[in-house]
Image (cartoon, rainbow, N blue to C red; front, top):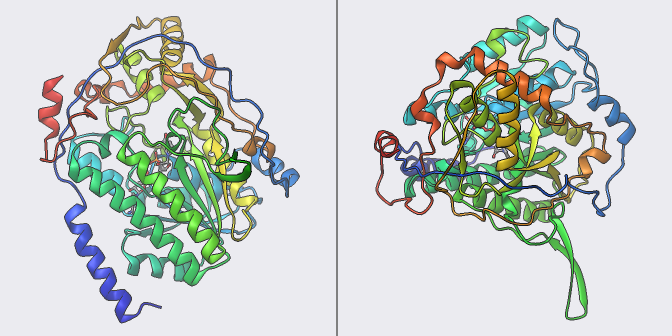
Length: 477
Ligand SMILES: NC(=O)c1ccc[n+]([C@@H]2O[C@H](COP(=O)([O-])OP(=O)(O)OC[C@H]3O[C@@H](n4cnc5c(N)ncnc54)[C@H](O)[C@@H]3O)[C@@H](O)[C@H]2O)c1
């Protein structure tokens, strides 16, 4: 229950946040990227032991692909109560529908901050998305399934504690953070906002679990970007080290490449501590870059369509290249283009979350899964999109532009990603068919593309203390 003290703390927190929240009109400065390089083979089997509990059951659940709409929900979820924080966002919305269609009892918690960033920065999703309320209403009509919608900020303790006590989740999936590295590097204000929002929100979720639902499993979205690009293989969360004749298994070293990535690193440390101190069960999902837009459920009605970001701040690599190809803009590769990362299809994101929920971590354990399915360099992606675009009759070119980020442009990269597969994930592999269908999808909406937004807009080296403006940044390009 809320005490006078917690109420005071809540209002102090709100005052602190008021200073950091909603950085108004943002500033952006952009700089360019470039082309060509090769990639390490797709991630290799990991040596790390894998919890095989319920693997058979999950494999069945995770590969259930039958259309879920029209009131014929799958029953795997068995009414498990899942709170999806950030459920109005790109990954969260697709996940909410995926789980609801499969018999989980879903509650979306979201403060609509993502929609507000678009308003502040003059950005827009390629796809015309319905309001959060309209989405949930339509899903109810199409599927016969109810999704609870609670609009509020998880940094507001009073709101979060009430949401927890009223919904009583068995599992919380926490997507609800500011998730763009460029956004966090716009200027000091956006850096502070990103870390305040992300780190404080996650601490509040940990306290809510401890206080109201100690058996609730926390499934938290981190990012592969937490690891950086070390010159050794990347393990799934932990590494066994021998030092001066002694041996220990420790959290894998983290080297986040932006204030956003570092907010996730801080989250991981905070969760690791809370798991030990309060015996909370936590799964930290270090997710790769997500691509694609359609899932079984989001295609069921136009009001269920997911957001598709292609701008220089929120757009992710493959999704951006596809839009550039569709509108005749050269693919903009940053620097040498050898930057290699893990990627996954959004249809695999939703299945990974389901697998994590169905196979909870043990109490007191912070388990880490690397959630991606394939590795690509930026140049690989440019080559794939060029080949498929040209096959569709588009004349696709690639240019190299000055890298606005501070990152290695040629490096070793071999990250493990076997734990989710061991639990039943059957990945969608990026091939011609997927790129083609993405290109065709984007071409359908290409009249909505604002060419100004395609350019990169934030320079890591400049990130000023003064507040800049979006229009100033775009004009520099
Ligand atoms: N999209 C990717 O490629 C990718 C890759 C790796 C990791 N991730 C992680 O996955 C998660 C979801 O990513 P996404 O692409 O869906 O992002 P998104 O911005 O589309 O969705 C995040 C949602 O969280 C909400 N939110 C933010 N702060 C909140 C707060 N304080 N209280 C309540 N709601 C809040 C936003 O309004 C938004 O709807 C993020 O944590 C992100 O870091 C995403």
